[in-house]
Image (cartoon, rainbow, N blue to C red; front, side, top):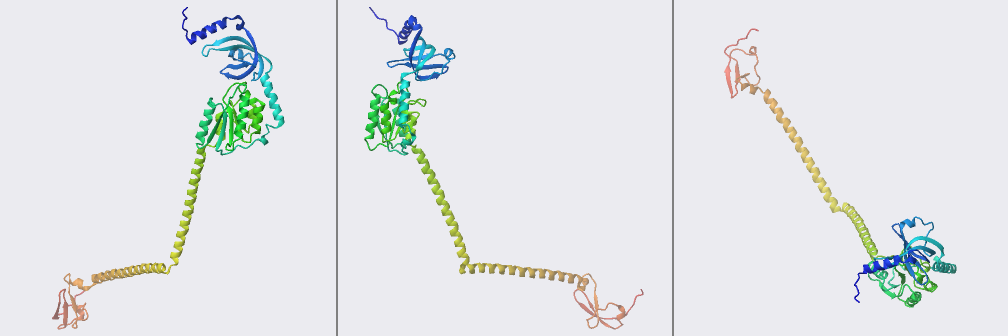
Length: 403
């Protein structure tokens, strides 16, 4: 008989048709404990778990709107719906139409009981938590060697502090033997003398996946550790007993790495700021001292006799120039006035009148001018002055004009 080759989708479609036609699976009530509860859009997604197995569940918006209870992780419920096959992954899932509360689940009750016990013993007291070292040289990372958490932690530690020494201690993070491995790993690291800090964690998962971190042996190993421990289990909304006992709880493994070491770039930036501050401080001192030195130089120079003598010489030369300029100014003014007076005298001089054809008659001694005829007689000797000389004359006749 020849077998027909089918695609994966054809197989999943076939399984879905078989499951969908089963009369029992069309309407079924399943008892279990809610885990990994979350909304995606308006649909509610969760996992029903019991001691032995788990089943994916989804409740779509039309049924979510009819819910009259506040569904939480750890609740023991009876979910009513039909079984289907999700073709994309080939996984069975319960399409839930109704949820009835049965009570708190066994895992959740166990978790709450242990949490109360350890709280009463003081394992959660903040006063007993060890301080996280500010600059650890070596960090022990206790986690799964194959999960994404280890890669995120190492990458962030290396980026923030390239010189950090990392000790990876591989463990199982879920399953029945995981809690024993976690306990032994913590004790093994504590026997070393070179580890400053421990990061204990794993990636996301369901409530039952985290259960190794909710066991008492792990809690006491964390409490008794002489090395400070940062717990980083799951996502920000996930809490375990390990988180309450640890010296510091990180919301994610990546956040644990960021809390464990300070980014070296911050130190580099601080160093640069200190260098700039020191430079500016030194320069301010140098400038102030230079101003003070210049002030002292000026003070010394002002009291130096040689400089003082040079200053006096300069002052004397300046006064000499001022005096010479003043003398020259006075002489020039006097000279100008002298020339002006001479010009005025020349203007009033009778000699200038002779140039216009007039003559001047002087007495016989050529001393006094004769201005009237009545002062002359016939045969008097007189001098007649011309522009270019004089003539000695004898008066022949005197005539006086009537007025």
